[in-house]
Length: 167
Image (tube, rainbow, N blue to C red; front, side, top):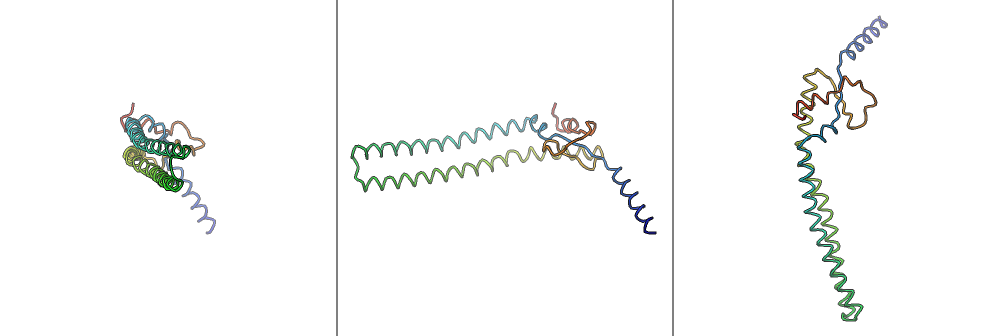
């Protein structure tokens, strides 16, 4: 009886594994062809340029102030006490620049997420629809470089391209 149950379990498991249908898709390839990604890249680059320009202006202003202060000190045109006080102010400005730099990274991350989330959602939805239409239980992503081998007939990338309107 026990052997019969084990044999029956093995047979049911083998049949259910055999009935499953798999596919794979290269998401990185699809993303590189999506016009939405190119637009998001462009917008993110412009935003980054805008933010870094302000930071560069802050650094340049600080360097100019430090240069003038050092020149005054070298010429003896500033009292040691005043020199120390102005150096402390410059150090505070340097801390503000470092704080701004951290804000830039945070803002860029938020902007990146805002721009790319709809694109990734669109790609995932198209993959899901193709998988459902093809009766697939699983679709692996070769863009993540985890899949070691797959038969080319299982590649659903062209179907997802069609679903998304990419030529």
